[in-house]
Image (cartoon, rainbow, N blue to C red; front, side):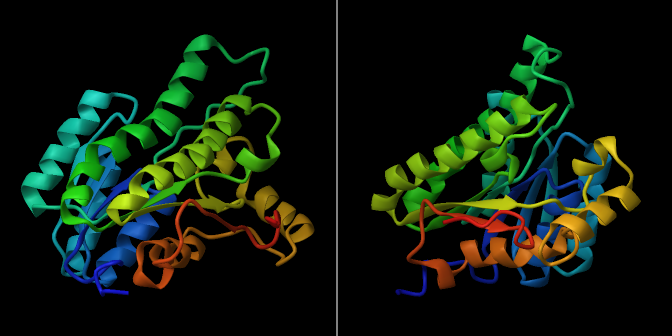
Length: 255
């Protein structure tokens, strides 16, 4: 290893979906590690709060309102990040939406919206940022999928399909970027105490389900996922690319 293959203090990282949940947790964790941050989200107020909390930890952090389904908006946000930081080492693509509907109920608009934000947003972010990584011959990408990509889900075929697409896209991205020394891996979270699983249940019911069904006896917290994301950005994973890591308390055990 040459010391340039992983994340270092002072590097800049883009985190999408940073207004809440997993995105906010990883932004705060990276800020503690002296990483400069470009935070993207459609929720301006939430993203601004996350950026302010990162600055309170002593790092440079900017926030940009981005509709991840809009390729032009993603390119503009990438330009702002590059003008601010000069170069970007890492990308954590975490943004996602999760409207509930059965396959028969889901409209074409809903399918396009979910695939646009979740899958195409992941594609657009990578496409906008890999040129600077190629130029620097270093970089790491972590795309956040979901256990639903592996199992499917009632009332969420559109969401599961978008997340399965992220797993597949990450493999192709890893193959294309490997010659340039850029790695791409995928995180597959389990049920986590965020807005997504709480869209159609109560927190008490969600926690009780975790106690019954998850081998480690609880649902995850956003902070449970940050260690794996940092690992995938770091030099410790320098020989990993195109892989998917599941962090889910044992709910789904990958081969």
